[in-house]
Image (tube, rainbow, N blue to C red):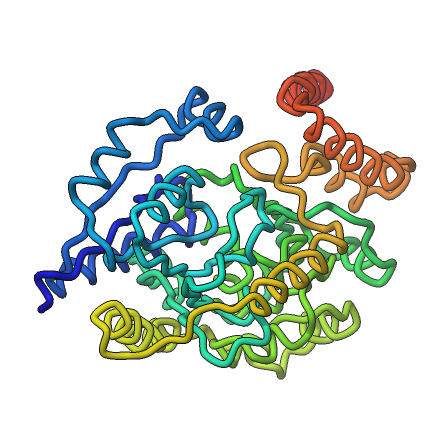
Length: 394
């Protein structure tokens, strides 16, 4: 019976515009509406707790007792790439069925956990697993700010002669000469993971742009920009072409490119009409995804458990992505070390002679940042660099 179904989940802290956190929040609410009993465990982000996890010290007796008293064999535990390792360990020891909503490639964005054979995986999209047969894509509900932006963008007919740069988690790289030449005629808007802080201002910057150049291929910003009708250039591609080809939002592939020539043609072609998407189109897969997850948890829809071969394929895919060395979420709220130079980068695009050695410095600072991250010294150097950059601004 439905009342006997129990699901344990670690509730995420919703920070900024985190799409993954919003997806989990919406899923939990829908499962509760279906009378599935949800046991929520608040994510503990304290420094003390992180040290304990890194040292594999599972001393949280309250959580251990909580699982023992509330769970029984056959209950579900919902995991994702950010789930705390010690919670997974406790869930496994209590013989819970582990079901992963794979929101990002396993073991790619800093987390070490990965499914084990016999557990279950629900790949979010082709970007998380390009070779899966079925996907469980969900677009967190389009909020009023985004919906209003879609409506307002339809009314804007004139070009703004501005291009938006978004660095996100990606390393900032040298752009081709044909792209750089655009900035003799186009102004530059910059969006980072920290600015603008207000979501209204964020969409305002996108609406005031004729296109987006993104250094992060695994961000919601690319979809949001494309949904407004902006052509998007991925400056440092990460994923195989098949990922975009198989992505659930089919019309996205006609607005996102890795070709600078195609991007420039889109920017300059007044006849190519990029009409903003409708809210219903963006959310068109939600009901199917939620229905399928509910049916799986209720035991009405079968899903094949993972095999050793599946786990090997996950690791192989992640190793490929890591080998590209373009996603470095190490500083500045999950941005690359080179993002600390984004203001200098902008000035260099406007005046190529101002900082002639900048493009030699960008890969160097990323490499040093990665080494410092491995040594556990990245935060100290980050604060120092921010203070130095602040001095030069003044």
